[in-house]
Image 1: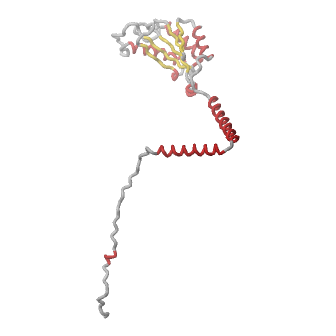
Image 2 (image 1 turned 45 degrees about the vertical axis):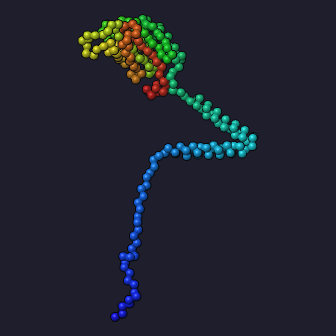
Image 3 (image 1 turned 180 degrees about the vertical axis):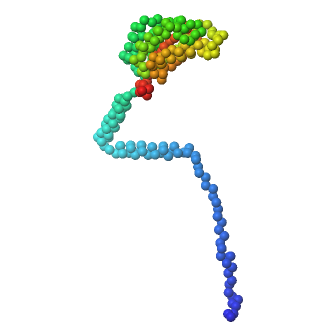
Length: 238
């Protein structure tokens, strides 16, 4: 047996374990982009500054040549934009509209034709409907049919709006459940005229109705407004 050494140091194994303190830091993601514009703005300034530094580093002859090249390039782009097809309204002074006016005026009907900047309105005479009724009389139906047959070649090329006009007196005490006031009466008058157009072969996509319950013109009548439509809409309709 080996003698015990009193000078031998006894090491506690737990003493070799170091205590490490771990700190958890909270990381927050900033969503504030209020200053992001400054980066883009500074980049733009840097590009502009670089351009002018290079531009003025050339001699005068080289600068003039560069300006000419830029001008020619811009002129070509502007020309391309000017020559591009437009999708605006039809020219209301076009032969098509002129022919529409001439055709309507030649019809043997009792009507007036009013013209505005972008529309033609056929104002038929009063008495096309019986009081408190929304069906066209036989004579009125014949007149409207003549107008529709004249406009048929322009189907889907013009927009046709049927405007119903009410009675001269306030509409009351109706036994018809669909009629409660003058607005209902004028709406149904316009709707029946539009239905006649659909039966004649017109595309419903280019038809509309309006109700004139205020009776601004002759009572118990109908107006037909003709409007040019955008060329792009014409293409989508086919």
